[in-house]
Image (cartoon, rainbow, N blue to C red; front, top):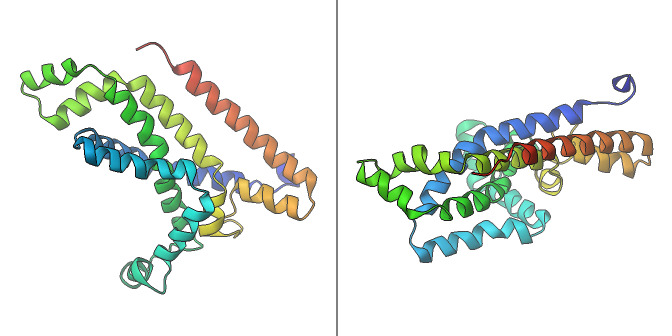
Length: 222
């Protein structure tokens, strides 16, 4: 009944954005966690500062620099367009890349904290049994924080569903292409379409509660 008079494509597009972003983010986050875990203290602190930036910088600032980097008329953006015919500005592919990179710190920070809190005896025992660093990471350390990892995965996916500022800067407001739910709410409010904005907001609120419930009820003592 709702679909008869409210366009649900922004909700669908939000799920597509979250799905593809997470599909890239999860293996990238796991691999990055391995690298960070074995860095020297100095470089680990440097990378932690970089990882903290999205927590304190407005998404519009990050979006501005993404626009500069991905500009199809220069630099990386021009190279991608010329050799791969890939335009990342004002496209769905662009908001997937931007959301993935923006969400990476939200994935890595709690993962790294959980891994660093594990007793060193776990790694030492694995090394004694002849396991490599990568094998120890995959088959010993990650399973030891599986509940935390599940929690991170669910919350990161949910966070991608509601991304607004960065998506608006990179993708704009193109129907069926970059007009995700958060941007649809903003657009409907600008047009004074309160009913439509309320419906979109209610759907996103229900989804947020749903994912939070999954994350919190899944967690059990490790």
